[in-house]
Length: 419
Image (cartoon, rainbow, N blue to C red; front, side):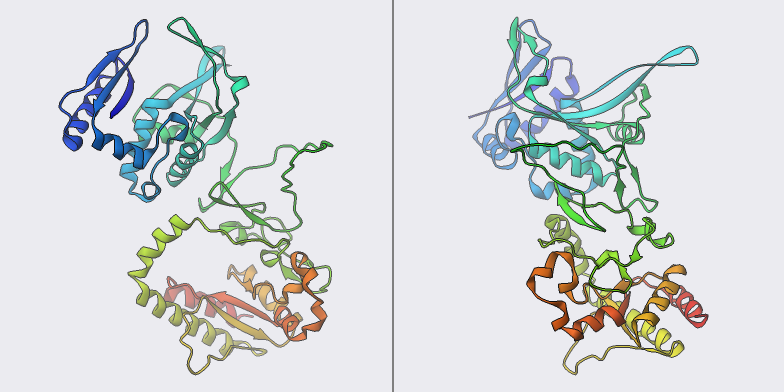
């Protein structure tokens, strides 16, 4: 059984690396070296059942089936940097055009990784995102390929080519990783990050409408806040996220508004449920984070309980008209948030707005009565559940994060006393 590697015949460093690694891990001391006629290409073939089964199990066969093992995506960045270097040398490239500035001609480049494997393309995009590099995605279908001439034979594409293209800061970042410098970088910018670098934001440049018949159309136009799962990423169509929430009334200007047509009060649109569906998580990533958190389980639990106790004491001591919740005798709660029950809806609205204005984040008690929400109306009449309606009127909570410090509690105390 054979394993074959293909290179440009001038890639001496890569050729030496492969020969060394195959000998070290699979015991292959010799290999067949084939230089293609009338071509710059060459290949190295190793006769090794052990190597064949290894590459088959972890990486698959055929260029369009290439993939990485799932555990690889969560590995240390040093390993991922090595992968990106190897991918770049094998299937990376730069392209661009001339740009005239100050009577001079400059070449403006962008950089890309390309593959016919959709899975490898998606995995590489996730790896780039771990480095804060957000590529622009292009898919070139076979009919848009230019045919190539190899050994006087015309080669026509049969599969999609997936490209991850990098401009601007993204291009500079990848050049630092692959340790190359290939001239001027194109300044085109297709997206930006939020101030806290937690979210990538793609502005909508234009909207077109077309009438279609018998065509699958994916409608991403929704009322209010909505999120969905796309190619392994959580996607939101509202930028009221992270530090953007610190803007007055959210970045959209309507975070607190009359979002429910059957409810006359003000609602936080973070908790508007417009569609039924599954709350999908990137499970490998969550598992990696969880495995680390488990080693700190007791510490996190104790800190959350402490945060809840401190926040509850500050608010209840200083504000009349609210109360906390009782813990059942046999319950041992690790508090996600600190809930408060207000005397009435108007008081809740005034207090919540005051806290938000002073950069103390609040959250609605989730849906309240779920039957009020657009995605769940068909399940029943919300009026049949008056106690659930009171939750929407009167209840909110503050986070009980384990990382809160004495400075945080002092600030909350200062703000609350001035209410």
